[in-house]
Length: 157
Image (tube, rainbow, N blue to C red; front, side, top):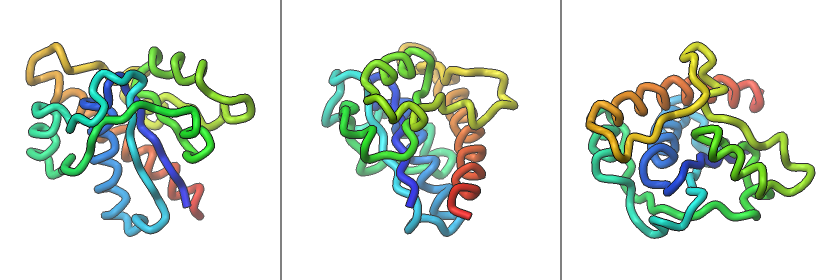
């Protein structure tokens, strides 16, 4: 079993998209019984809220449902529960590194480290931008999710 947590700021745009996209890829790969996914935010701004409507609509247009998700804040206990904690940008990574208990540092990674071909480290926050920002984010998340799936397959082999 591999447990993965995706983390952004409020858990309403980037991390729920990554959760939804990766969940579909895992299901298509026949690994749903071996891989658990969740998402969280570094802040409590949106706890209990569903994903941003623009995020959900963009994902749905590409066949990824974000239904049933609600925002939560990352917890220190997540470092015990999850094998991989994937930060959507370097700011989230720094925040998570401060929260990370000693001995669990190897669980924390930048999400786009699984998409080295994209040439970026950070998935940009689309919240205050226009609709094209949500499309760009989804492009990056799909690329990262594909690379992550290959990594997970290797761990499960």
